Every structure is written in C-alpha cells, then in structure tokens.
Amino acid sequence: MIERFLILTNILFFSLLTTLATEVQNKDLVYDENIQTVLLHPPGDQLAPPVIRLNTTDKLRLSFDDLSPESYQFKYTIIHCTDDWQTSNLDQMDYIDGFFEEDIINYQFSLNAIPPYVHYNVSLPSKDMKIKLSGNYILKVYLDNPDDENVIFTRRFFVIEPLVQIDVKIPYYPKNLEFVRKKQQIDLKINTPDLFSAEAEQRVNVTIQQNGRWDNIKENIKPTSVMLNQLNFDFREGIVFEGGNQFRNFDMKSFWYQSMYIKEIINDPDGYIVVLHTDHPKNKKPYSVVEDISGRRLIKARSGQDTSTEGEYALVEFWLKQPKIEDADIYLLGALNNWQLDGRSKLKYDSRYHMYKGKLFLKQGYYNYLYIVVPKGKQRGSVAVIEGDHWETKNRYTVYVYYRERVPEYDRLVGYFTFNSFDVSTE
Image (cartoon, rainbow, N blue to C red; front, side):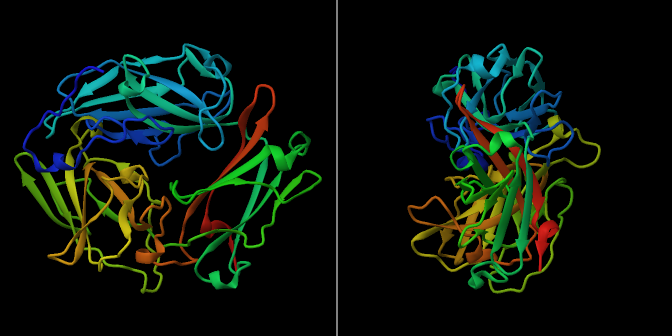
C-alpha cells in the first residue's frame, strides 16, 4: 500500500488511534488508523441497517472520512459469506454479475475542519457490479488490490430474498422463572413454503441479534420440530438475552453549546475535546424509560453545516464512577465503536479518581452507548453488571433465517425480520 501518514503531530487525541489487527477478518473493522466514520446504509436513512433485497433496485450508500492530506483512488469488492461469516466456497462469478471490483471516485475535501479530511462516498451495487445471490456479504475497501496489507476497512451487509414468515413474541414469564423481570426470551416460529420443509433440521439455520451487538449473538439455531409448513423452536430454557437497560446518550451535533450529559467542550487550537459528565452504575436503580436509538449513531452537524465536509471531530472523554472489577475489563459498546470490544473501546482504571476512563475520536453527531463487562479471556460480555437487567427494556432484535442450498452450496438468506421488544412483548 502507498505509504500513508497522519496529518497532525503532537496532538493529544491521536494518541488513541492505533492500528488495528493486520489480518483482515469478515467483521466491521477498520485497518487503517486514518479512516474514520464509516457508514453503510440505505440512501437517506443512517439508522437503517445495511440490507438490500435480491433482484430489486435497492441501494446502499457507503461513506467514510480519510485523515490523509491528499485523495486516493480507493476500490471495493464484495465477498459472499456463510451464515456464520466464514468466506463461502463460491467463486465471485457465482454471485457477481459484471465487474468484480469498482473504483470510489466521489470525494470532497473538508472545509475549515480540524483536523482536515477527505470525505468519500459511493452507491452500491452499481450497474456494472450486480449481485446474483442472497446471503451475508462483506464489503472490502482497499488501495490497489485486495491483498490484506492494502485493505483499509471491511463492512458487513445483507442481501435478502424474503421467502418465509417470521413470528416472534417476548413473554413476561419465561420458561426459567429465575429470569422473570430480567431476561427477554424470544419465542420463535417460522412459516415456510414447501421448499424449506425438506431436511429443515439440517438445512435451516437461524441467527438472532440484539441491537447491533455481535458478542452475544445467538447463532446456529435449529428448529426443534416441523409441522406441515411451520418450523418450531421450542427449547427447554428458551432463547434468552439479557434485558439490559436503555442506552446512554450524548448530543454532540454542535460545539457552540453544551447539551445534556456534556460537562465541558474544550476548543483547543489542535481540535476539540469533549468531556462527558461522569456516569454512574444503574444496576441497582429501578428501570426508567429513556428514549434511545438502540445503540446507533446519527452523524449530523449543527443546522447550516454540510456534515459530510464541514462536520468536525472531537476527542470524547468518558468517565465511569465504578470500583475496580478484578479479572474483567469494561468496554464502551455501541455503533460509536462499531460494536467492537477492542483496545480503543476498553476503559482504563484511574486509581487517583477511583474511576474508569475512556476516549474515542468521533465526528459531530448524536450517539448511544452502554458499558459492558467482559471477563478476562472471554469474547462475550454482560451489560447487566453496570447497566442493570430489565425485561421492560426497549431492545431492537433482528432474526435472520438461512437455508443451505446444495447446488451451488451456499447459505441463502430467506428470512429477515427486525422488531422492537416492546412491540411484541406479552404479559
């Protein structure tokens, strides 16, 4: 890859921008420390998931900022994956009609922003790169060629062919009564055409995701019984998630005033520093309704600004008043860090103040987040330790239904359903 470098030196907030893993993975990851604010969504709706329907004119809009002093000709390709995000055995010609890579030619230089950046955007799939099969996909953006050392980021997206009907409920009384008023149990039934009734136990896989999280995702869920054209999922303990709590939030659309939850805005000559009010654990507090956007983010500058090129960045400081937890780490969690439990998202314990502290470099906008506790050596965490655990929490769930096709062998995404827990909860 062409040698690239940060445009600012001796700036406090760049101390946190360390290069991530060099091995490219089928996840939402950034591999170049200059790349910020990667967004992939349907045009005009940042909060919508990156989903398109097969054989339609549906599009996705990709945008990102590059903190380099000059523009580059980035390229992208797409990779088909299995239901558990392994690269499938298909050749690109099996799922792409047309070119296997495209150039990203639309870019603009920022205006009066510190630090300056180049904003890129592209609409996909294009007329020269059409998608032929449903399933899980990875969007890979790179310089020159898609070898690992040239990849700057990867993003997941979904191509669906909605062939099944998904029915869900969240009962007030779960099968395990220890979870009453805490956990959310997903009761699931899938109505299928005759095509999917054959070998359903072997060929149908279901994945359930809570909000945008990947650490607690339920995968490889098999039907327990098949009745005519209905698949039932009746497990002894049920399909259970932590109820958790409503997301915390802060509004950073403007640096001209301090909105709720922002303690201080420092206008340093080298850039903004935003200090949030100290957070406190909610695990012993009663549940209260706080409207949120299910952990997502809305990149938006103040009125009159063009967010794409005039939106500015700030180093955001998070403080959590929490005694040190031994044998576990605390992370920030939400779309603000791409739902990743990585080094940039991990909080450090400050023994002087008896608090945890974290920093993230973020563009102007409105953000949701939670604190999650992850035991040492584990990949799954718990938000209940700090945030509490409540059945009433308004969580956003997504059900993915996959069907293993035999020839060619790949996982079709034949069902997709997103719902809010309070819409299907039953007492």
